[in-house]
Amino acid sequence: MKFVWVCLITIMLSACGFHLRGSRPIPPALQTLQLESHQPNDAFTKTLKQYLNNVGIQLTDKADHPQLRLISAASASNPGSMTPSSQTREYRLTFTLQYQLNDAKGTTIQPSRSIMATRTLLLNTNRMLGSTSEEQTLYHEMHVEIARRLVDQLTAPRIAKKL
Image 1 (tube, rainbow, N blue to C red):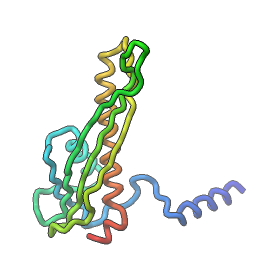
Image 2 (image 1 turned 180 degrees about the vertical axis):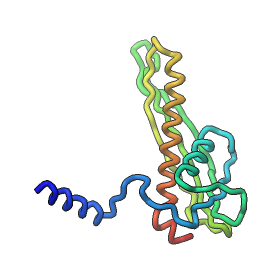
Image 3 (image 1 turned 90 degrees about the vertical axis):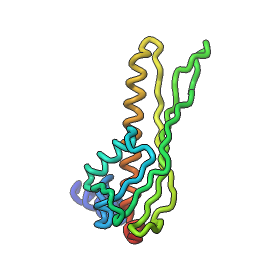
């Protein structure tokens, strides 16, 4: 009986278009990309390059491949809650990427689009030194999340059809 339920749920999920994260194949036209970034050595661009390589996308400088333009990548830290003595206890960290995808001829395939990730950093006044490393860890997690979401958007069927 359990087997029947498992089969039924599997069929229903596959019928609605459900896919496991990262399970979509890389379209052949995107297996080699040209990456344009105004900040080629910043932490996010390095994380993105590594992620693209890990999922099977090779980067090239040749202009005869689709081009992924990183228009902007911005980090922000905004105060959240305060203690009664007006000390900040938490910060809301955000990382926003704006990108565009062009084909090998320079035609825009994916117009300028933004992806944003947020995290909350809780401060412990007794461990201020640890808060800095925790903040760096949270930003790295956001970089990886944005890279993953970017690849998910680039491998969407509507993008593959345009290439």
